[in-house]
Length: 115
Length: 171
Image (cartoon, rainbow over the protein chains, first blue to last red):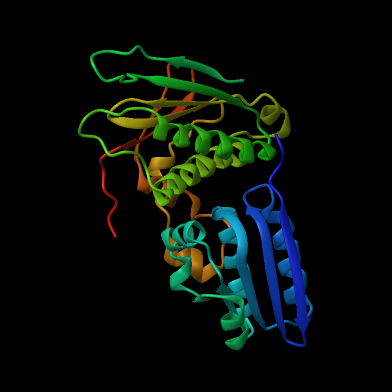
């Protein structure tokens, strides 16, 4: 049985960054995302957009990594926003009340406009 | 390892009375994807059986997604927190039994980890968000199903998650 995979494409421009996720975020794959998020915040990014158009699954582990990053960015006056959530990923993030804490945009272009 | 037992047919319409599939899972997070795929395949197969006269025709994608999520969270929680050290984790035995009847679909998760009732732990989401915690939201997912917990006589945790076909989600 194949393991879950997560692919992270990253664009950093000064204090802004966009991460596009492809694959699944579960307890196995989330540490890879968390390490990348920590590196992005350490690089001085203050406004982060995460596009989830090709993310097919997220568990509480994935939400937890985003939550820790949200706190780190807010603590330095920054922000975390999301775009392109699939119906199922949106439902999971609604269940965990994450979507009450961050702005969610319908697509990448809208997200980038508001970053 | 999968073991399937199918019920008999009765009456004019073919009704499958009971179908049961069992998976054995090790204490490795790499197993989670396989667990999700097995649950999805099991739920998808409900579309190909005849249910009782008054049951819904099956579960929609969100209802399926919530079941898969709850099971993934429960199994991940056992692997991550159910065993005191790596030696104990290497001996982990987690068994997922999936059953469907004309009335409901049911998932029983048994494990030989430390005694833990996930239903006694309420998530404090305010604290979770204020502190930027990485853990603490997973067990919320169990609230979307009818769940029960017992400790078996042979020292196993037994968590049962059930969903009736006809139940309507709120909101």
